[in-house]
Image 1 (cartoon, helix red, strand yellow):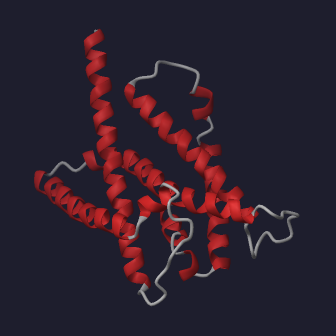
Image 2: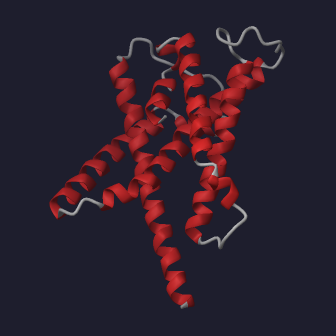
Length: 209
């Protein structure tokens, strides 16, 4: 889903029809993901909410809302796959919602992915290997932070920029490199947040024992 999301961000650069096809594919994957993890819904009212669980639940709920709003707004403004639907007069509002949530979705999905990647990173036993991974991740994250502001993502996320701007002379490789680095940046933030809340929850658990 994260890889497909990277393609979605290219929008006009890959073609509007392809954009709608990929968006539909992500939504189908999203539905399948939640069917496989349906136990999460049953567990929501049960058990104690530690700092870690609160963080994970808030992140998951926000991502759930965005992943519902995105395909719905996309269908309402569709120019190719869903033109048969009797929808009219809402495409302008749907476009603004779709644009803003696209960037929030990119950020939150990256944080979500990073939080779940933490156990894999912890499996790196070699100190040199872990140090190398940290240095590479830090370097890519710095580049991602620069790309995040250069590409004006805060403006899209805060609803200050209402239209997506693309440089059609820019090589696709450069575009994908920037957005891949942005994904790495927020995945690293997700891992750091996950590690922070794990420690916080562990400290509270020791305090009560």
